[in-house]
Image (tube, rainbow, N blue to C red; front, top):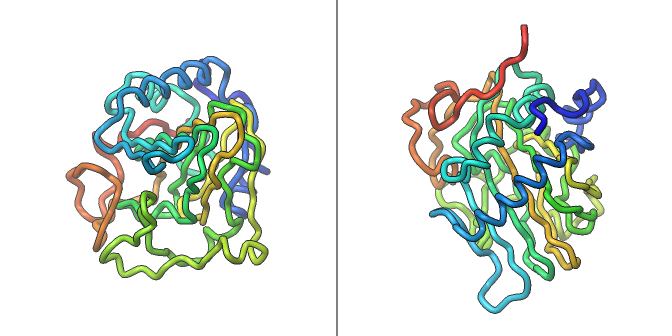
Length: 272
């Protein structure tokens, strides 16, 4: 299993990430990671954690399943955090000198799933401030663009944060004071929406303020993916008003403290 990316993160990759807020990196994880983590996903789905959710209503077709903090319960996910190339990929794209892990999120849409992932930004869900905050979305199955996450290119630079909503029923988070997100789906032609055909070993890396969502999976293949979240030098812990989803337990940090503690371990540092 490769510890370093299978190919270098290039200046073009960094420029695309900075400009668009999303970059697709091809062939960064070897087959051993994909095979082992794919098996670990199936094991984790058989033993859901306390924050697992089923987003497909009872009796609905397919299955939209999500779970959080798998690294705290499953050795394979913990190994991925500390031994995979993910932290280095995040650090090089963000231009960080150090990278801390925030949390992991498993998102699975079985064939025939109708439920969308609603349009949203990630960072308003999290108790984190800063620009060097990103996600790596790693699929374990071939994913045609028709089932892939979609991104509004450049929306990470709108200089606005929008109120989160619950994936389960679309209800807004309470007490945040943030405005609702514009109805992206009703006005798709107005936006530069990007999506990708992906193969196992490819990954998507996106800045935490980019607006994104995902269709259901009406295709015959599975759509298993792990999203890992990472922070860099300028990220700090933020005690926000209203509902906050992440972290799921108190890290014991003061408002404005660096994201550096047992719950948010430092995983990578740029070589001198």
